[in-house]
Image (cartoon, rainbow, N blue to C red):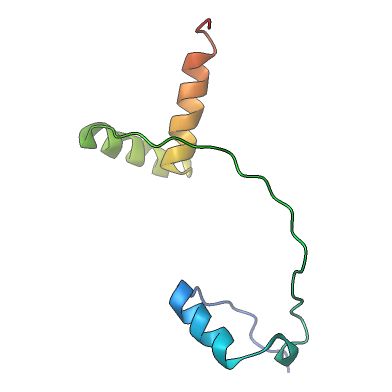
Length: 84
């Protein structure tokens, strides 16, 4: 019989408690990642009017994107025409 592979989302605290009580060796299909490379991009957060944000949020939901992704796309599109 195959085990249920459904994964439950955990908070950081639940995950911490879980790994305090368990070890990787208990799971045959889990491999510890020892070397990972990634790069961080700098971001700047700004405030916007709540009414504007609510419109952006609704449009992002309709397009199935995050608000940040949508705003970033719109700004890149707008700024592509700006010299500087």
